[in-house]
Image (cartoon, rainbow, N blue to C red; front, side):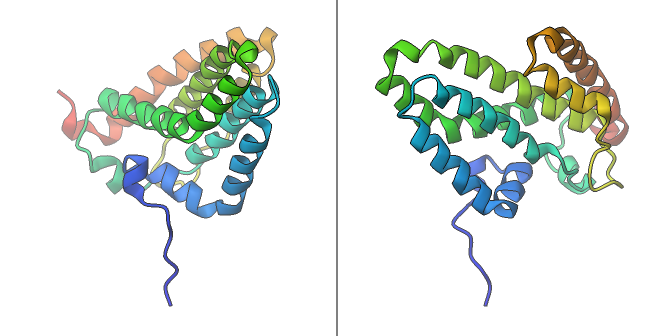
Length: 189
């Protein structure tokens, strides 16, 4: 008997990263959602917890998809990266927006923290996508987890290291486009 999942890839914008991660970590996903629901009643902590879920969403970008999946959209590297970033932000915000809205409605005085949460989450997910494709190698199932990549993620948590993380973000962005050009050369202009 084949196990049927309630999760449909169409709900995730056909994102193989998100669908595979959510299927692989079903219980952790349910626990994260339950935590977000419970903490929506607690001022300030709800948005801090949602920031933590952005770090958990980085797991979606810890495995390389096969080259065939990367070639499927037939896009050049810059457009593919933009699409991947858009998918990451859309999926994350669709998953967390109900909890953020509930927290903001329950605690209007703490709603200003939502702006910090949104900026933090956007930077973390942008960094995860760009770092993945900067290190992308279709022959490796996981990107090379370098110390610099981890240091960059920690930099988003520790304000003194934020400039380093932002420099790495730009560096990975440029490197990701160059790296993907090697595989997507048929779609370059």
